[in-house]
Amino acid sequence: WTTRCPARSWRQERMPVPARVPGHDGRYRFREYEPRDRKVLGILRAVAHDEPPSEAWGKPPAEEVVHRTVVLCDEQERGRVVGAARVIAQDGNRVAHLQFVCVEDGRRGLGLGTALVRWSEVIGRERFGAR
Image 1 (cartoon, rainbow, N blue to C red):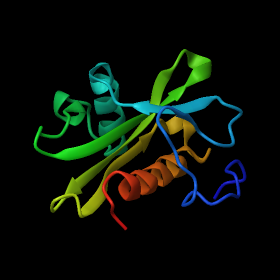
Image 2: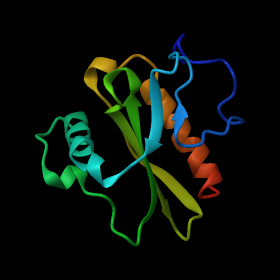
Image 3: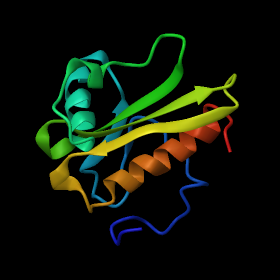
């Protein structure tokens, strides 16, 4: 945990989307992925893998893949996307795994990646019944 994250248990906290990220005075919020996010999501994922951005990085999963994707927005920058995470369900929704978490380089160390991982844990349990 960073000092900016609240001490309360994320396991007990419901995190509806859209939701504010705790510990940042409402600056950051989660919202559901939308098709308009594809390009920025591709850039974030490529940079996280130290590769040049390409269209493939922004591609959503195949339609038969059950997934939940959230983006992290900076409200002080008119809702600009600065991070994202995706959870994918497999084996008839009995198993969920975190496909990726990515946050802009300049925002690392603020607990935003941790908040995205905690979001994925909550969604894995609530949406997919994963443990």
